[in-house]
Length: 409
Image (cartoon, rainbow, N blue to C red; front, top):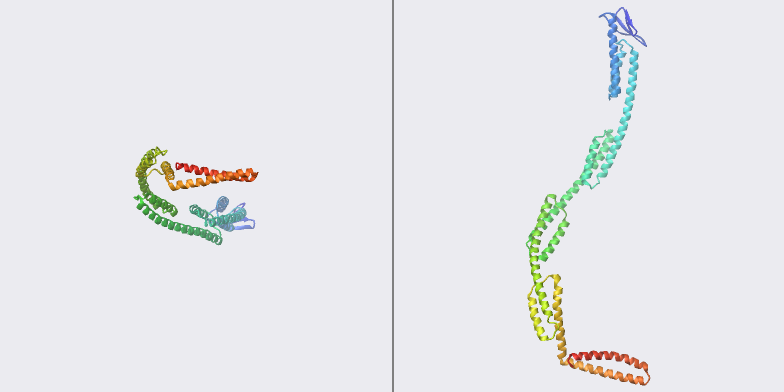
């Protein structure tokens, strides 16, 4: 019979292990000596010790799931409970019990952590949904679209929630994206329609601009080009691939017209500048007729000057009033001289002037007699009133005498 502190082998070859519940049969050994039997089952015990040590390390240092850890513990416990080893099996049970407690603690910790992560994920997904729903109403198509795509990437990186909650939030999130996409599609469809309408309008404007480019009706055509430009601006932008080409054609047609007009206007300006010089010389020649001394000769000379004036073309608009004013001044002087001559040589006018002068002279003489009489009678008030009346009649008489002098009388 052979034994050690944790086991023995009896004379029949039966191996026993000592436990708190008493000895337990380990097995039967017939192949060798009792010491070899104990050594064999002690090695099995050391194997269990190593296996438990490795499992403890895995539980403490790796992310071994509680389910897998507990399965491993149960497997080892079955071996310990089967008493197929010689050693301190009770100590192994204590270690396994502690390991089970550790696994359960880790299970609760991970459960709490998952709950926390789930809560955080829920809040994060709710925030994503809220932002997506706000973005669904945005008109900032590019920025909002890019942000929604970024939100999708963020969503994919978050843990899943319970199926119901995750599905509900995803439905809202997806609906917001769809609503934005629908609005953006409608917007760009409308924009495409507007740009197509703008293209057709601008095609028409280009066609008219090109048709007008060779016109020589400078004023009316320039005005029409201004109207076309206003219509162009009001039409809005066409598609990018058409806009530049249409504008180049439109602008090119205008350039052709305005270049031709500028060339013609430059020639006209040069001609009008020469005309102005000629008319200034004629105005100077006409001014030499002043003052009028010989009406007949001056009238004939002015007529000749005026005929030469009319033969000359237009002058620059801003210079016209001044040079024409000089000629009009000479013409008015001639007219006044003619009126004076007519009055002087008109017998009827002379007779009327003499008659009026005689009447006024008689009235003045009468008033003077009445004033002398009133003074003599001491009626100064009446005399003063008559003198005021005399002043008015005398003024008229003086004017009539001056007019009579014009007739040479």
